[in-house]
Length: 209
Image (cartoon, rainbow, N blue to C red):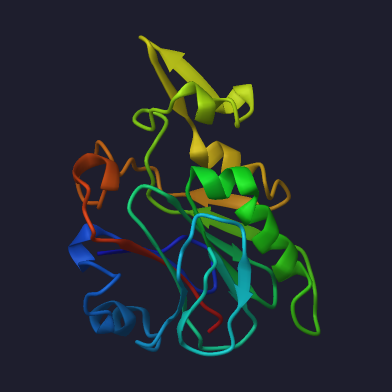
């Protein structure tokens, strides 16, 4: 139901078994993690705006949240896009990165905001990506492929795909990265908009204990 990246203070990714996190019951997930059931979230728009959260509830528009407030869970929702958790020693951030957000630099923007947050600024030291559509399945047209570096684009059998996770990791190269090794499109246990146009969403969560 939940995936906890090792070595993080407060980070988790939900699976389909946990239910729809965009509108479903979050109390079970929160109880399992030992966090409050009221999360801070954003109205996601596939951009690069970062919001500093001071309390629970939906803010926005934006695609990333950061905080140094203890006990405040931050959440973004995904169903193929990349969910990212970033930690400095004194703050945490989460980002929602579809291909538009990756091109716009949303993860780099989140890292910059984090690194200057609060009275004890510092570099991002840990980062994690959740389940996402993998380069095996993220087929794009030439107009999208052309927005990415050649090392993130692969052409096989007439199909052109992009490695979103690799592009995301390069936006914060100094961090120690950890990844959920799963493709939401072709593997079971996730929600995938590309697979079936689902409205259900997985959650990427980050918090300061």
